Length: 197
Image 1 (cartoon, rainbow, N blue to C red):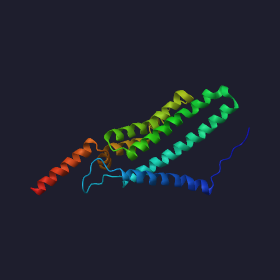
Image 2: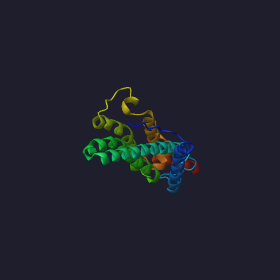
Image 3: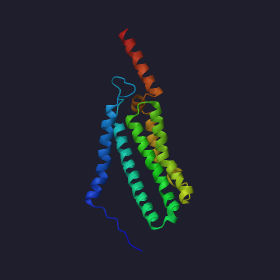
Image 4: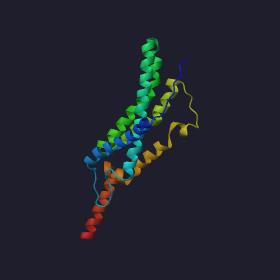
C-alpha cells in the first residue's frame, strides 16, 4: 500500500482562488454583452450587483465540481487500465460527479447567454440536477445510505437560497423577462404615462 500526501502549495492556492475569479470575469463580460430581456429606467436589470456575487459563487462551485470530476475520471481510468473487469464499478463512481459537472456547465451557459424565462427556469433545473439530484444518485450507484442530517436530505442551503434569488429577484426577472419583470415594466410605463398627462 502506498501513502499519498496532498500538499497545498502557494501556487495551488493561488490557482484555486484565481480560477473562479477569472471565470466570473469572463462570464460577466459575456453576460453584459447580451442585453436584458426587459429594461426599466432606474431599475437594475443587467448582470451586476448581487447577481455578480452570485456568479462568483456559481463559478467557484463549478470549478470545484469540474476539478472533482476530472480527478475521479483520472482515477477511474487508472483502475480500468489495471483491470478492465472493474470498468463498470469504476465508471459508476464518476456518474454522480459527471451529472453534477454537466449540470453546472449547462446552468452557467443558460444564465450567461440566455435571456428568456425558459433559460432562467432551465438554469434552475440544471442547478438542482447539479446539486441534489447528483447527491441522490450516490445512493443507488455507490450504495451510500441517505441520512436526514445530510444537508436537509441532500438539498443544500445554497441551492435553496440560489433558487429563491433566481426566481424572486427583481434583477433576474428583468434580466430574463419573466412575467414579474414584464409586470414591473408595465407598471413603470403606466406611471410614466400618468406623469406625462
